[in-house]
Image (cartoon, rainbow, N blue to C red; front, top):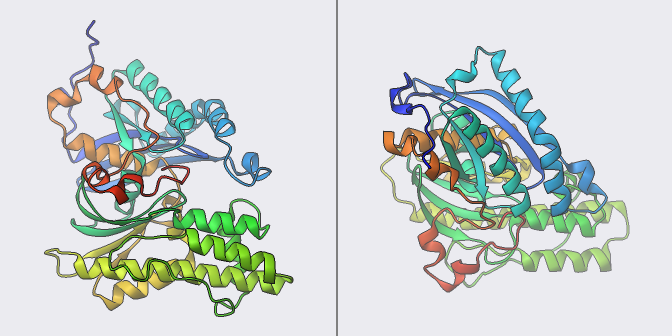
Length: 385
């Protein structure tokens, strides 16, 4: 059976005039957004997010079943709110050219909820669906605020991922380095849990660190004998847990350890990023060094990486704080950019778009992910691995 839809190639919407609805449900935020691009200018017409922090706080981390159930319960209302908010800025639903949804990587139950909802929404309105790699959403998220020329060097650093990538264009990524065990955000969260700081751990640890002495505790530096750009945070996590058990007796001890952990993570991110900067080839007079993902919101990490970029002649770029953590605006934008590169046949292939499947793991650079034994397993321990 053939499903007929209106032919997008006949729509009065050139590639620089597109509007996409985005859906994100890969972990513990449910989000819906409408993003429009006109004449090269990106406009976020709405961005609605439901956080599940309260539901997971009692467990000290994300419970996949609770997350999936919350997505089911909230996603329809969030979509209505996102569309209503967009209408206050002159948006009409007839403007929509496509629907974009996170298809992975992430907690598979959550991904399936958002993707299934997006399929139903798209099918009911005769719109194509674009399955978006959540990591690509982060990779392109700075474009929500300002133009950034390709190629640029990207440090993608979050609770589930820690990677350095050469972003040569939409869909064109070269991995320069990745975590071989834990991600930086995971280290923040789990060390915070050991210290009893509550959930989410990263922001709580940052707040506690503000009162601490970052030189108080000497913590290990990972992979010192290697000259590549890979990361490792498991040793730091283990060492910090031991210090917490043996030496943290007072609130000041706790603050000092938090500051020391934060400094150690920032140091490793800077060391590996500096190696990548020296190897990064480009034709730009001042290339961009983009830092994206939830850890990009950490002020200490951001400050150290900004200084590093200045030192090596890079322009430091990071998404606005609202788009560092998971959101649907970045998914809508990634879908929009993908859609703008499609020909008329691809845009009208409803059956093809409805065949999009949810993926618990989905590397941005799939060729590199299978090219070496190290990269086959890299970064798979996080919630969105």
